[in-house]
Length: 335
Image (tube, rainbow, N blue to C red):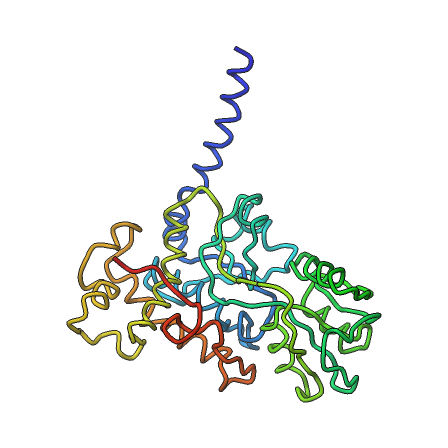
């Protein structure tokens, strides 16, 4: 009997946790906004201007979910979080979703009570040095002081890479991206290492970008994407398929400017909610995907206006191109 009671108590705790988490959509609709965890400021991914307006590819994922669930991409409360804070904020329910240049790993996906809903940017860890050092390869970094942000996969990746290549280094660890950059700028370290996208973002924000060199070596896989709590499959599906809608829209040639054009393409019409019943599977209105593309744009529109080659950050699509264009970006079909 005691064992049965213990099991029942444990089961109640699990059921209670799932019950709390199982109403994210209802909670969002009741309060009228999506609470989305983002970085404290990474240009092109999630950053606020002087007026408090947030932009970036991670920000656009948050806005896509707001457009899908509330019909208004502007109904987002952005919560800036450090790398150390982000998972706790999601686990505790402080935020509804996390869209903060966060790497998908088995540890994070399987041990924290969280689910990654997809990949909105395929990245890899790199190195940036001051051009005055005359370094052209990461293999020349033995003995260097390296600036690292705490609570990231960066620390472990660097340790693995250094050990595998016989390169010793001294770590200069900071809690925030801004502190890491300050340490690098002040000369406390010789090298700054993080996701290559972050390095391009930081270099673009420098007073003179030509004074910094991003080295050619990429030492890890960093699939970055939105994250939700486990236990709410409906919300998980909404976040996953909001991102997929942006990717599929690009593949089908649907943009924010052409979304109202009616065609004889069955897949395009299903995506726009003008036929089929996929909206019923996620508990949303028929126009939920239409609102995403109309208000936020397709994946390409988001990429090019935030981090593309015509922006100060200047990142080419590379592996983040569609699978039909030689990249690995791919969405399951809307069917």
